[in-house]
Image 1 (tube, rainbow, N blue to C red):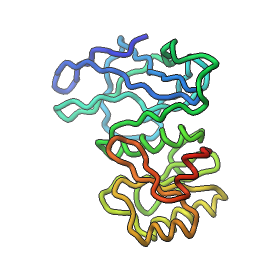
Image 2: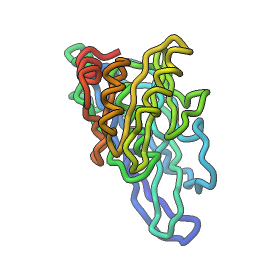
Image 3: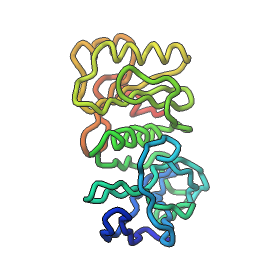
Image 4: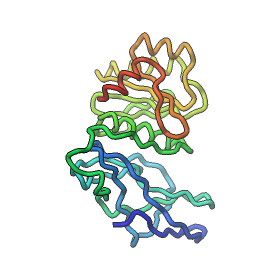
Length: 227
């Protein structure tokens, strides 16, 4: 198993060394994708939700979860998908029955819209939601996510969310008989916060470190209680 592999960009032939990030399993053990050093990188030409995630097993508890597909951005502009051998390596010191049910959240730095979606999905998984996927119904703005019993909206734009954005998410949740949560990179208009409080919609702001910060009381409660 390898946490770092040499990568040559097929577009410009530049050499890189890619180091896989670690993510927190629900059992509390940090996990790192097992990279396949024998397979070359694959240039990303078109985005597809299924291709952006890989299903792997935690080596400590055996839980199967979806994690972001490892990728490397080359200075030439190419985005390279790094092959995963399958399974996750777990640092032995963090494993075992003494692990906390909810470990500390480990964020991902937000540089792109995709990073914002990844950060929100990881946070939802940290809260205890499972089977996170792209929502069937596309929201008026941003990107929709769905999990069992929840719909979420991620707005990676630089425009604060409006009352209409909050209301549309709430209506979608009511239609699907589920809860909802909103993640915004630029924050919320004052009227949007008031509307969210009236409707009981948790609001989070995504900072550039990738750590969602609660904006209202509903978000504080969700962070404290989890799914």
